[in-house]
Every structure is written in structure tokens, then in C-alpha cells.
Length: 166
Image 1: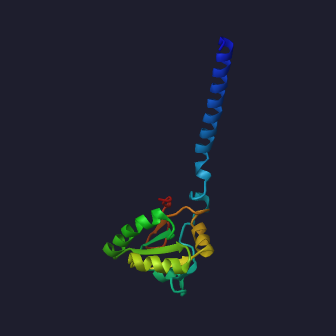
Image 2: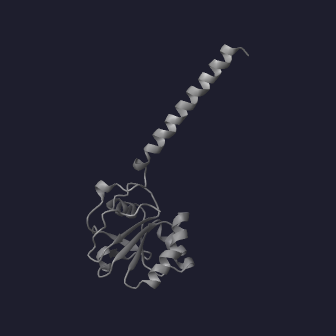
Image 3: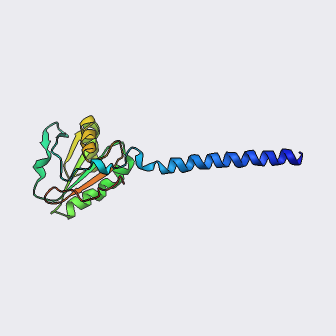
């Protein structure tokens, strides 16, 4: 292979590496806009009012859990990270009586009933598919970024920064 041909080949390879590097750079810098990222411009200052069904179809308003700080965990039975953190939330619920843990399953009722019974999860969990997604959007989560946890103070105020999906 001639010197000119070799240099041309190196130049093409270098050009391809630069193009690939630029693509990776652009992709990494777009991370805050991905689904599952909290949009701080849409995060409320206090807990929004909403109602969802429990595992048996009975409607519950979020106000029913007033009087204690509230940890709301959005989860789904098909979400492996959600299932891994459930025992931790269960232990927190049992050990911290001054804190109310509440699950909101973005899932189907039969699947949630089965999983909660099998896993022995003692804390309450509300259920909804599109309705639960709409509730997660009230907290600034634009898409399916599960698990997603929100901690509210005694007066239902949200801290300045919500927890990001874990």
C-alpha cells in the first residue's frame, strides 16, 4: 500500500473517530432531558391532591395519610430495581413508626395483589396504570422512571430537591 493511500486511510479513520466522539458527547449531554428525569420546573411546593384505588378497588385520597411525614414510592411489579428496594422500604415502615410509607404502583391491580401477598409487604399501596402515571407527573416525573421516591414533611411540603429515580 502506498504512503498516500495509508495516509488517506488514517485520515478517514480519524474523521470517523471524531464523528463518533461528537455523537457520544451530544448523547451524554442530553441526559437531563431523558424520560425519568425530574423536571424541577414542574415540581410542586406542597403535596398535590389526588385519589387512587387500593389493591381491592377502594378509592383513597392522599389526605388520608395526614399527621405523619410521608414517603411515597412509585413502583411496578415488572420493575426489578423496584422489587429490590421493597424489603428496604418494608424495614423502614416497620422500624420508623413516625413515618408513613405509601406505595403507588404503576401497574395492574391483579399483579399488585399477587406480588404484595407473595412478598408480605405490610404498608399500603395504591394502584393505577394511567392514573398512577398522571400522579407521578404531578411530582415532575415526565415518563416511566421507576422506582421514584418522594419524601414529604409533616406539613406536606416537598424539600427543595426531589429524589431522583434510584
